[in-house]
Length: 323
Image (cartoon, rainbow, N blue to C red; front, top):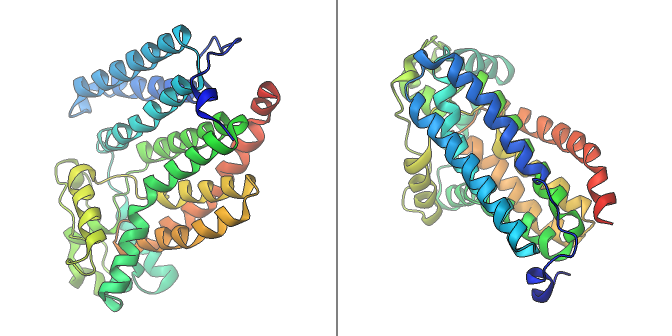
């Protein structure tokens, strides 16, 4: 277990270069910057997108300089935390990149209808509107970022040798999902249903909306009981940062799946069983609040497991270096 003394103790042989997760950030930054430059005239906010990338670049190297001056585990934790916090800015950025492409929800809603014979995101909440169920579903959805934080903190204090590996896997998986979102403009039920209406859904009609979401960002209020505590927390968060983007595959399900696999990797069975109900509620909550189609959640589970295995195998050397 990491002690307070070890957190602030200066390292004798500090790392000279960037952390692997910082390199992941820079690679994503460069790839999307090229997209912005080549599509400059089609972008709505190209200047702000370029400014975001400059700000992230400067911050990353500024904190690296601080670490070189004061090389300790505390500063390394700050380096990781800053990149985690930047994810909140990278998420709406996916909307700026994919809004220039035609919307694809008509295909995903049609596939949903073909597979299940109905729209689970519409039926789930409608048949289970009670306060108890609503609060459980919204609690699960709300626990997305706390779950990531809990896993990272656990590795930092309990298994520091694998903390860098853990944080790299999570951050890199995020960027893989963001790349998919950049090129796959699917907005999810809460936006798509708001436009086409239940009458169209009941008839199995899912119209192609083209570039509608390029200029429209209204979504449905979250289903369930509006008097709930977690209902309001989720609604407030959606009001602040939700964009018509990032529906397929569900990164909520994918990243939380990766977190659960990281917990299994730690071999702490008690920790796993404590987090399992939260994980289950989170996965169900993504469909219940109409953030995702059911196929988004299924694809999130599959891709999360695949990304985890690939990234875990590709980071075996991190343990060898630390050991």
